[in-house]
Length: 268
Image 1 (cartoon, rainbow, N blue to C red):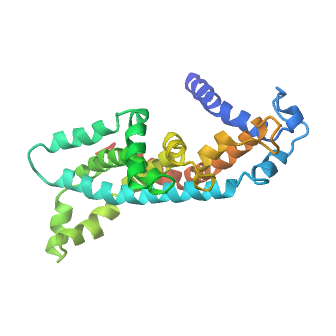
Image 2 (cartoon, rainbow, N blue to C red):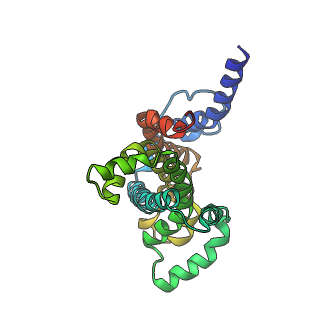
Image 3 (cartoon, helix red, strand yellow):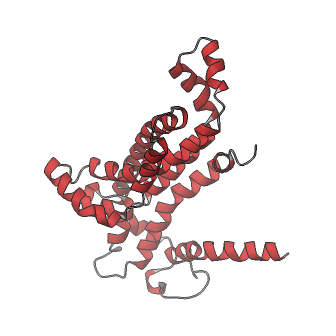
């Protein structure tokens, strides 16, 4: 009973901000400061305001999808190759390399903004997708390498040996045997990389100044409401709900794969 009560309190604590965001998004502009647990009457005017006027929020959502999807694909491509090499090859300093890969993710993102902005300005990358994808990879890739290395290490070497005996090359054994077995870990890593990039704010805000290149998180922060004079709280809440919906859908649809990936290797 105590465990259920504790779990219930934790759930309420975690979901309360999201519940209040949804409730606030359904309030009318004149009722935005109301403290009732449910709007009366509920209104969709904030959601209509998100996609009306000069907000161009649909374009921002598309930009977020392009950046997050590209970052996830590239992170998996490089992360899988690097993690498999670290898990299977034997060479001096392997643990040091793995430690350095993890250490790169510990640098605060704010410290990298100025040098990256200077570099991208010289390369002509400012206001491009590259300026958001490459820095996002620098944060997602170390996590992917560290996570996938642990998955590949759990797999017995006999899998590749059996595939080689059956006529597979080393790459063929990796593609046909190792990757399918490691699918839960790869899928979980992809979800985590996508979530991290979808929610990224600082890099997108600094590297992009054109409105048509901004991502959804930046547009939410800069959203001004239905007019230039109203309080933007309601429309910002509605935009926040819209940005959160894709993540909730991904978790609900793929929750079994995510749990399988997170718990893979926990028991032997």
